[in-house]
Image 1 (cartoon, one colour):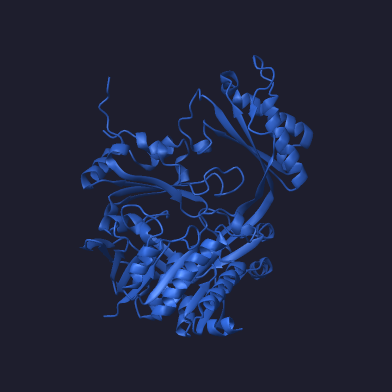
Image 2 (tube, helix red, strand yellow):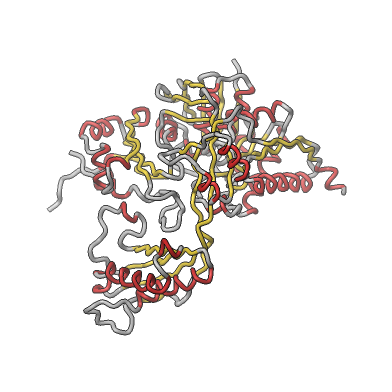
Length: 462
Length: 107
């Protein structure tokens, strides 16, 4: 029976540097592939919308270097997806450049690099929409229309295993993929090895976050998967961790609405009858996944659009009377803002008062805000298209708390403490505009693969 | 006087919340053992209705509620008021929304 071994050092390459000791221990097992995802929607819409990154380049390079040196030394392919947090073309090119630099620095023998881009233009999707292709909303969202696309600044399509598997079949030794579903990176080599989509995607689902599927909780440690048909064995590589039936099953439901189904481009993994068993002290085994092929392949689209420039101010309140009447003080401040700048929606601005000490973390979902907090820390967040106006609105939104008119206030020299009388420049505000799926003719259609020969010896000689 | 009460905090080994995509926060309550899991499951203190009431939201915003036996776990998901990381949002990963579950009493 075919068994493929995959080493995974991290669930988000570059987000914090991964731990080398367990990774090198994993290399001792001579894995067939080294695989890591590098992106996530969890970091919010800003990096995608602004085409920026959340991870420092030095940490990305640290992780890529350790993986590349090991992969070339072992002579096995390495696969990285969702390059540089977002998987935009910028991210793919950045990681490809890092791979070339690392190869040159270490004088690595020539190898074949595949880059797979997944960014989509607004115009392309507008044209699809105009031609009658639906762009269907996920998670209760409305279907996309031209107006939604027009307020989207950057879009990536989420690839599944097919483009990556094709690149590997054509001899890629390093794959740098744009936005990809986490499990696809693992599924690609497994599908090429002849394993079923059920086993391939399910193995990817279990392995994608590296040591998060083990116990006790530790991030950024490597795990080893040994995958045969309907027989997925995951081993913890940090000496203090174990992969147990409980930890593996617990991970199967992590970060997802439903632990029983995983949707991929070409179908759905049905995990309702999965079983988890202990194999040895550090290894657990999972089996029992099924795969339901889709009638029409559906590709997920992620998009983010700019809402406006953002400014922040920090205000503290200690006077118990002001704390008790903070809602009235905020209402008064908002009324004055509207007098000066116009109604928020019509005039295109917004102010959010985050009341730390009352419900700053959970907002409207806070079930038990304290009636009499000792003090309140208020973050005043302002968004407006125009930067100068955002600054002005934020300053007034904060200072209006200082000057709040409450009938019985005794502290007539100021109803609030300004941590510093300054307005902080925040990153621009973005929102997730696209969380949608679009039917495609085949799963590779939206993705662009290029091959490059990387010769570290030639570059070093030059 | 000390009250002799048992809460989810006593019976669960893991109580966590996290984004499930950009529009939802999902909650996992994983129990120490089968006995604790079955005790809570049978008690009915966790249901779509009780968690909607706990977070003071309409029942419709609880989009998923799953009893996941392989992990001795109960899991539910709620729809965010606005997508994660939008202006005005305060928990971009959805990672601090589980705290109110600690004090849910279990008979």
